[in-house]
Image (cartoon, rainbow, N blue to C red; front, side, top):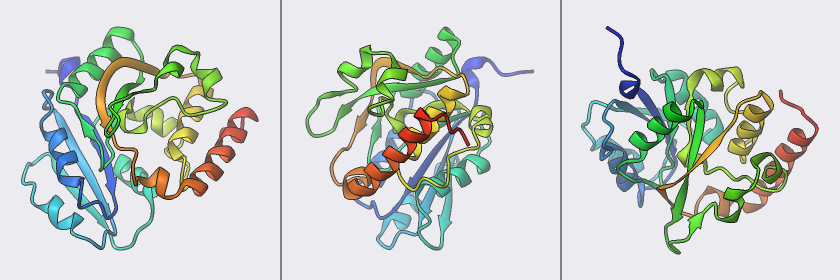
Length: 233
């Protein structure tokens, strides 16, 4: 007997490196979801602090832990997690962010109701309580993408076969891998919807984007040029 749409397995992928301060709260926010049919795949990407020890404390059968001996970076780690996943739908979560309890339920229902295969949501910035995206939320995404990334990577909900079609995350991009992926999916003809609901609490301090700001800018410009020049692969 086939499962109902609402019972589809969601594979949540999270890669973490030296984030002992936030990892437990982030994992718990996934386990607190009202939607229960998910697996949480966590890659400890060669952490040297207590991150791995904290992850191991979670005994929930839905938590699947992988570990890189050395730090190989977010892009490659996410691709490994996708290929290890069992769900039809892939969800993202960053190790320093929080998913609100109704996130999975609401995003799944949004996909079904609107007959789309990719969506993200808006979020609240942790320390300022501001909503993101703000004004760009109301503009055509193809235009916004020429200047910035309007999508919050940690809120991504996408059918796995679309990631396979896109060739997964582009491993030539150590940073801005999400922007590169989003532009590829759009060029492949898929629409990415942003929900108006605020389903995520986003940390913007001392995260990968701010710590490696110059590298982030470099890879963003590279991805933007590839997008504008229609270089998919």
